[in-house]
Length: 415
Image 1: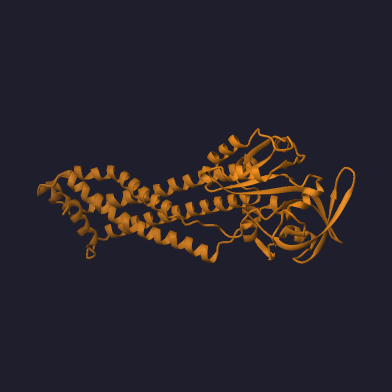
Image 2: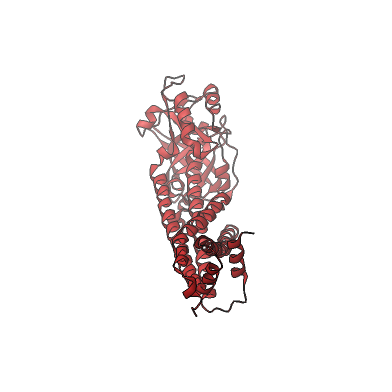
């Protein structure tokens, strides 16, 4: 058996040791490591959960990649493109693309007897991925939208419903104002969604694809564009480059030039804000590692000073400084290990408690979510454990050289 490991284990497991200083020092060091690791786990979990939740909400409204007319991307006026079956197959065959859906946009005014509200009407069909909307429905039932017929079904946000005092099942008039005329349509509110993303909840409602196409006086095979969802968000740039290669600067059957852009390019302010959160994570990680490191250094120094007689005896018996140093480093490993065990239990337990109960509430007006989102990522937690162990042991190497300053003859007379 490895002698330093054996000695460290015997010292650590000797619960009959009545020293009044070393045991409190060990407890403080263990608590420091446990608190530091638990805070790091919870912090990373909250930041990752928050980033992914906000990102998924933005993607839910705008997809990962949008293909539209080049003129639309250069102005505020909507220009139609022809996304026919041939182009749909091209988009679906691009590696990394998992779903393609067409959409059409137009503006209108929703009016009730008491109030009115300007909104953007988004027409979608049966080929559109509605899982995001379905997961955020708070009233009514998600309808089956069509790309062939008009059912005059409307899905609005909770904010719109509150302003217009509407509920699922109510009817509302929509007025479409163009340069020459004003047209009215009567819709039935079949469902109400709520995402707490103000910029979308205040303006976007959904209906069948043909409605905005006809109101914009486009041809039946034209629309505002196509939205693409990718299989892996981390490979978004790679997939977007393939879309650019196969679609951009090509023309549709009406001669419109096609272009594409990613969700990050459409909403740079949101993703820049989310990327700033990474700085907070690094600051907290560094601070917590410093806390764990300093408590371990102080604890190790106290233990070495209290074990001066034992160190002198080991040296008198022929032990080298290296072996004695390794003994105390192994002792530190046991302390760090126990602290990491408690840190993992506290951190993971806190995450699971929040996931199942949502007891930490947030103001959706400021954070876009009602409860603190936490994501349990096992690989990241394993990396945090490894990093904590390695960094903490590394900072203990220098203090462990204190044993080389202890002389056997003087230490054995030490009381």
